[in-house]
Length: 291
Image 1 (spheres, rainbow, N blue to C red):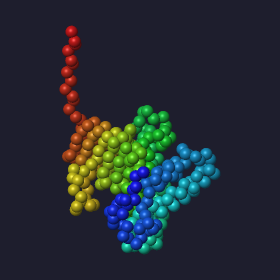
Image 2: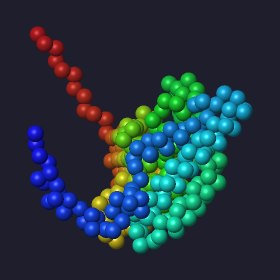
Image 3: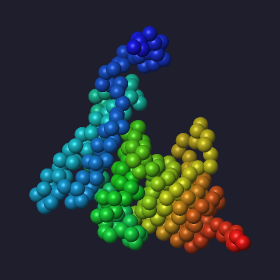
Image 4: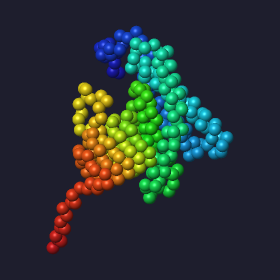
């Protein structure tokens, strides 16, 4: 049998945090990614109980109350831990008070977030002839589930909650293949069709009635970190823009309203409104028939 104990002491020496007096205590723990997975199901049930378990008005109220209690309790615990981990010099009690305020603010905003999500679901139904109803968008489409998590995480991110919004979006990224930074601002009636491989960067701003297909990247030109915090480095996509599969749009540029971006486009300069950006047609030659 292999004896791991021979290496334990040298391995533990690599953990500088073992020298913290609080190591192993609740005050030094981090939120768990597994809790973010639970949170997604709670949010889906909370926002769309009729598509999950509620069958009538009485069960609707009970489902909403139960889901809201579970979701806010989970977020309260996670935010308390994240705030204290980021600032261990602040007493845990103060971090818990801040977490309570964060959760109260989110709870007050949930009706508005739900209204946005309803418009997103309707945009998905209107934009995809393969869908048979709004309920299909809600239950089946990965782009919609990514938006449920993103719109909630974005609210927390803009209210200064550390770590948890990133955990929320990275969890749904692993499930859907859709990577939306919680800092990205997204307008009404947004739809991601198919979804796999979509990347939306931190300072991206997206207007209303925008539609993306799989593989679209809204990214930055620079990967420099120092001195870039808070600086806009990702695109602005104005209203009524459609971006087809695998298009890449980089930098702090603007794609004007009512524009269509064709598949595989590579864009680093602003595009005026009402434009069509297309790639050159492939050079096609018919092969001679074999004799």
